[in-house]
Image 1 (cartoon, rainbow, N blue to C red):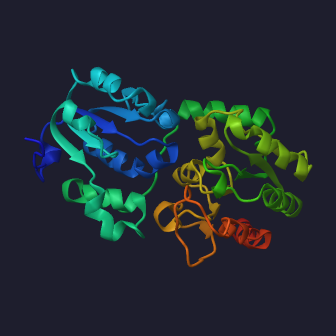
Image 2 (spheres, rainbow, N blue to C red; image 1 turned 180 degrees about the vertical axis):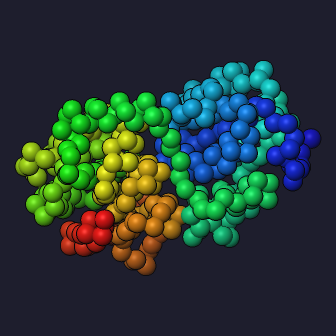
Image 3 (cartoon, helix red, strand yellow; image 1 turned 135 degrees about the vertical axis):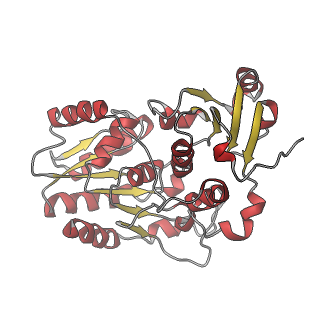
Length: 336
């Protein structure tokens, strides 16, 4: 039977082994983390394995929720992954990708997400909310939806020592993190504007500033650090692990960012956010939480696909001014 009806009382079915088929990017996997945590809380004694894309390994690596991590690289095809999984015996396969993988794996129950089912509602529904709606009939609904990225006590202790010894964490001085990069260049706010905002923040508040990013964004981060020209600014792009980044965000009073995976990580670490959006849709992919500002200009073409050509040259990113960002930054810092 291709589609076996999932019973409403599935939580009482003696589930021991669960496979999560996750998404391709870190940010997207963070958006489904509330659903993964709901499953983990429901089946506390079950063994969880996860499939992720190559760019999302850091989401699962080191996470105590997962016993095994499998990487699905579309460039190498699906056959190798199926070969690794076909002899496993899972009680539930939860497929967030709507792939064909669940139909090659031995399992009692398959849970898949068919986008057509949500098409009329999803355009302005946050992705985390949409996902939780699917699970609600089977597992109930948590009091509130929060992104989840756990750090162990040992990690917290190690990272605290590391950032203290490097003078990034200084007693009595707050930390502000900025993320000037983005997976798509058209999602990047102007680097000169980032530098101007950071220079104003470091001159008006007693803070250290961390510039985050991956190794490919090191040069961008270094250009901004040089433009700011202050010894309280640290370029950590490509120098720290994703889990170390999670810790520094947990200690940050604010993240100033483009539409990035780091934005969702900050949500998970309860860090206030000023997020700059252009062609993306903050109603679907914006930060979760209450201490956040999302800045974007509501042009008639909003929202659009970032990978599409723009006749207006993505002026939606240019429309966000330094003054707009500073107003949001000041409101958060003065309130905390």
